[in-house]
Amino acid sequence: MHRPELQLNTAKTVGPLKALNGGNLAPPLNNTSSMDISVPFKALNMPYTRLHDAPLENRGWRIVDFNMIFPFMHLDAEDPRNYYFDQTDEYIAHCIGLGTQIVYRLGPSIEHHVPRYNTRPVPREQWDKWADVASNIIRHYNEGWGNGFHFGIKYWEIWNEPEGLWAGPIDDFNEFYCHLATILKKRFPEIKIGGPAHIRCDKDGYSGKFLKCCAEHKAPLDFYSWHCYTDNVEYMREQVFYTREMVDSYGYTDAELHLNEWHYVPGTWSLGIAPERKEFHFEYKMKDLDAAAFLTAVLTVWQDTPLDMGCYYTATCTRFGLFSPFGVPSKSYYAMKAFGQMLAYPERLEILSNDRDLYALAAKNASGEMMVLVSAFHVSGNVVTLKSDRKVACVNAWSVDQGRDLGKADVSYEEGGIKFTLGSKPSVMLLELRLV
Image (cartoon, rainbow, N blue to C red; front, side):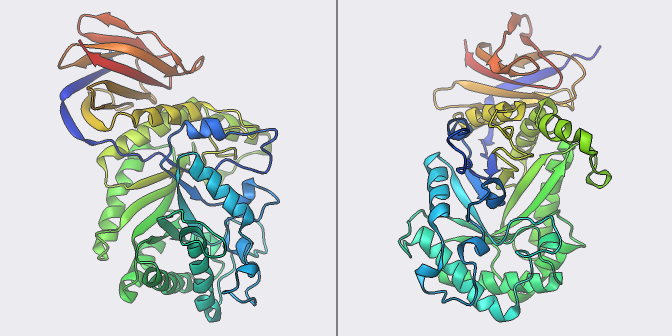
């Protein structure tokens, strides 16, 4: 009979705990009188929030997107009166006030309809003016231009998924990126410029063409970004190494890697979802225990990869969100919150699992107190034994399972280690340990 076991080595550190629990979107501000997720959002301890698709969640607001801030390209780009910053100011200030930094996506939000209006290609004759407008958006938030701020936003991403959101030849987009990135990096050497948030990473397709164009133009690429929606934990890990090798092959060995849209998606996009099953799919399957265990497992396996930033899509109330459309936290929310609590224990410890679907992350703080995060994705057994090189006691235990939302759980002490029973499969456990 298979018995899932973990082996914790309290004396062996394996590096710092990487805060890869970034997200997409800040708490919406257009209906806070009836639904405000600010407090639970802050409890996630997210290091970065990527601002993409903000107008879609804040309907009626003119925020973030290039076309929302500067809607008429015939106007003078150097006159602050031609920009509408007010609602974006509030949105970003609120987000930063909740303890997360910003990844600002320069460009439009997704458009699903045809014809498209905001994702049309930028005409070549407007590239320089587009750069001027983008520069003034950066100046507004980092240098106080136009009655602005000094937020010090570090990451500025050019476009999103150009394969689908640049409704023109992809070679034109690649040259547009190179042109814009070169100008912005020269004007603002202290910020990081990158992109383009490809739908997937493929060296023989869009990714390779983009990187080749960047290399030929000697364009700045401080970070390369791409997306992935899957139900395969190991694929989430392996593609980071694949992407690192690909980006390095074009000479960008110092470029950071940002997988800045990801989510648990069972099945395949191409089959579609029947209308009568959409609510079940989006509000249960993609946010419940499968997704909860998946996301903590992914954050665990990413620790031993060269990934620099991960941003979950989304951290708010969208169909892909950690909350329901009414602001109710999902099981996925509580799993992400459990990982956020791990960040108070910055030094990672070695912990080994004898089950391919039982993932564990261990870390300690300066006082030697330890925390262990356990992700039981599709593990076969339901009683897990935690062994250690030294005698440890479990001070507290919490579980995300069928009946608990990061609620207190029981453990037992038997010869051979600490034992705990999974409240359901899949599930997530968080254990606070001390040496005795």
